[in-house]
Length: 134
Image: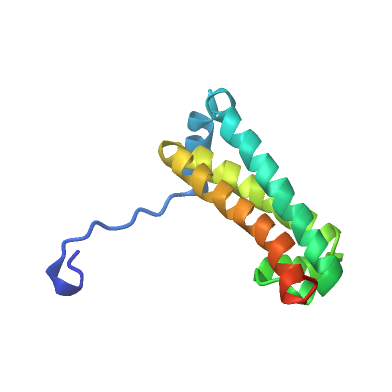
């Protein structure tokens, strides 16, 4: 298939749910043993982000959340349960993604851990600063 500029691009393969399930099943053996340290760091960073989100929502309310899904769940479930459910869903998504794309798992883990840690620090530092607490 020719794209703009005459580039020859391959067709994107759309997988069936059966193909996805088989790939997840094939990539699962050894996953926990290989990535346990990344999973531990991910859990710590996710917990810090979740707790800091609850902290800032206690001050500013769910409407101040910039992530639309987390804001929606927090408005529906409350500023305590919304971030917990949201972060658990994100954690599950990261696990599914890193199992499915196991060859790229380390890169995905590092990026997500950095983003979660940055978000946690931002929630704790920027919220009081922006509200003039310091």
